[in-house]
Image (cartoon, rainbow over all chains, first blue to last red; front, side, top):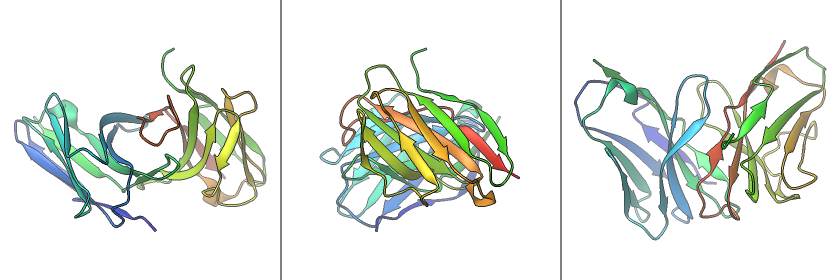
Length: 111
Length: 115
């Protein structure tokens, strides 16, 4: 059974710092991997989608990498801002398209 | 609106009541997913539709949970005889194609509280 783990569970950084969020998964037979952000009381916003054949994706200050063989993904956030404060969720895509999520990393960026 | 919408946003039910949660996916999206998110946890898959066909319901926790999408657009998740452990946020997501490689777009969720 696929299991997704995110480390750390919570992270607090000063504004302007570069940071890395980690995600690991137990079964490398994935179709894709998505990173989401979730604001309190809100739904999930898709940040980046990496297909199984890809190694990384970039969007603005965000860069996500995927290493299927080692079962790892990282989300790099450059020059963090207070508006980046949210919970970040990693999810791997199964054979039917359903997503298997980690528990998330709660990020707080202090001004 | 252009996004996924869900109603109601909040629902309080007494234990034993039946509830119905609605999802309006993005127009034209083929795939629709329901997830359950308990407090402090990541979402967990419940069920998946491709158009009107329910292709996977392996995540439904019991036979009290039932989902339908009769015309391939709007979907309803019904929970019969609600229990306290059903309290959670129920998220709906849709994607353009079959869903295996597509981005899933999520609605704001319905927060269900069972007293």
